[in-house]
Image 1 (tube, helix red, strand yellow):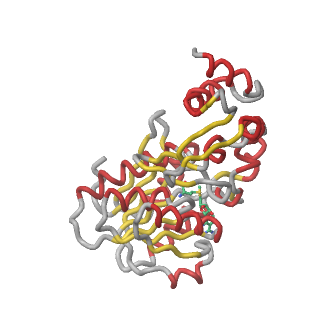
Image 2 (cartoon, protein in one colour):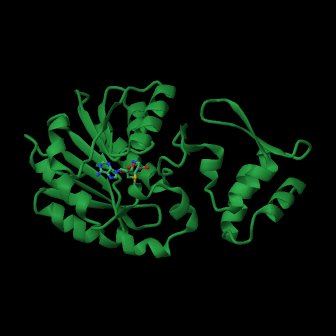
Image 3 (spheres, protein in one colour):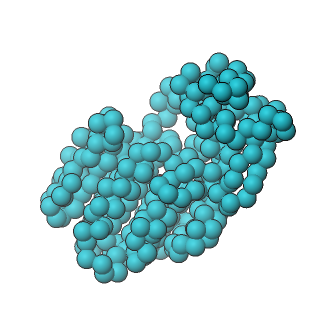
Length: 282
Ligand SMILES: C[S@@+](CC[C@H](N)C(=O)[O-])C[C@H]1O[C@@H](n2cnc3c(N)ncnc32)[C@H](O)[C@@H]1O
């Protein structure tokens, strides 16, 4: 390990998980200028940013996620601006987009309409639009702050998404949504409040609670199914879910859809539920 890495590792609080310290160290060591005692990096806007060393470690050792400190997160081949207004996109969500990408590439290239529910940073919508410029994507969120950031991400990436501020759980607002989407995709909030105590401080203190917690872990999945049933044609559905209740969820969707499937993440856990009245090829 070079001198920079050893120096940095020594400054990261031992209260942070050991593997996380090493991973953080690997990412930030190349950004560190010992002579200037600061971290220099290029943000999502291609701007050169400097953070004084003292400030950097203060934030890191207060358990602030590294992605918020740097102000961006890599997602596929692009950078998303992230801050406390939005959930930091996770690797499972990249996997969800990856599966959906395979499916869309097999579909006829007509005017496909996608609805992204709970868009947050808009990682899903923006990645799909980059892969398939012909898609028409509506991305909704209940959080005005999240949508402001999502719009900025779309503007920087020069991608056109139809953003809407909307509480999806309030059925009276569904009339504002475009009728008959071909595909619904979502990574909705699904963590029950009682699991809060088991979560990391870095999540609880910094990431938006409304992106994570719900009273009923099935509420969004049930509402999405109801919304789908109200459409002239049943849309295809791709949802991220908690591996612990994935099978129960699949049963709920099987009551309405002819075909459903659970897709595993890279750890082999069922984390994606998909449904459609077509044979699921995955
Ligand atoms: C788990 S985050 C997912 C964010 C992003 N799609 C991703 O995968 O990183 C859930 C998102 O749903 C939004 N949300 C929560 N309640 C909502 C509601 N009732 N209607 C619409 N969006 C909601 C949150 O603001 C948050 O951005």
